Image (cartoon, rainbow, N blue to C red; front, side):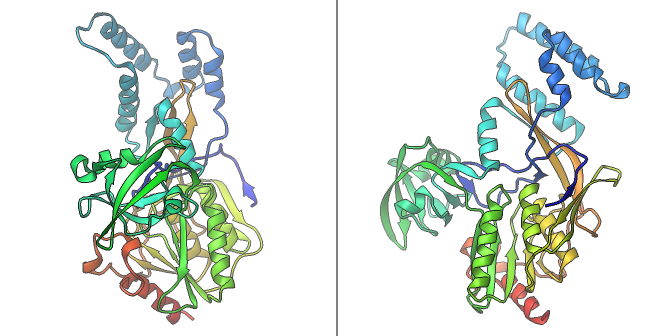
Length: 423
């Protein structure tokens, strides 16, 4: 992919080891390859005071704030030296960093502790350790409902299926500990096992699942139940292995006789910018696929697709939880093709974050730029309004898209009708 590059690399989304379906991560960036020069300067100065001075002096004069560091240093000294209570330094650092982020108003900014960093970058790479299931985030029938089982996962190896409801974990009833605790109990190191009792069609089954590392499945696909010539590709999120899964899904459907495609990004909260761009490059012939701009709207980077692409009718399903890279994917296809957007207005996150490792072992995610498609204005805080606006049927609201059949999904039917009417 050709790029006109004037910026440092960017970063996006985080996946937990047990994935709760359709939790919005709202990010839009690429993985930072290196630490900025100012951080290198920080590391090369011996004294703490020298480190702070080096960082401050690297800033424009009107951006320097030495009073902040001096004030915090004195306050910390007094509390550490004379306070009658206890001070947890790790928690203090975490809350102070995130308080700074909250004060400046960066609603997508986050400080990560050193302990959180490994899982953060493992999720960005699409490499997880756990069971490999998408689960409902509230209890159902006194258990945790599995919406989908990932391919090549420990859960699939053990025989778990979509629709199973986990009632017991290592002999502990889920209803006795609640969702949060039960979800934590599913986590564990690779090589360890967990015993489960699950409800399936009125029958209670027992499973032993051996946790291991696996590739997160972010793309699911099938032929439309009402018309086998239409392929449905559901994109859960955008991470580093999503493009390969996406290309395989599209090629399999087209090779299998599909003449048109529906891309379902409902509930897709975003992911890495690079993965989104790679997927757009695969779909589109040469041309602009995204602009990166500063806060004033000045274009600082432009991304292009190369020759190639596919030439079939496309419709895109969106909802209010479609955000960030999910919106860019939608916007670019809307700008560059005759793709018809169907559903409800999207979330409206057209800004991107940079995740950078810190010398202390933690990491910081902070908002740096805006991004938008080839021609449509930036959608941050605005969202994308579908060409065909249709709400999910009342009887389906509150359900997860995995548990809605093709026959019952009225939004999917509208996307199908849009394809037929657009030919």
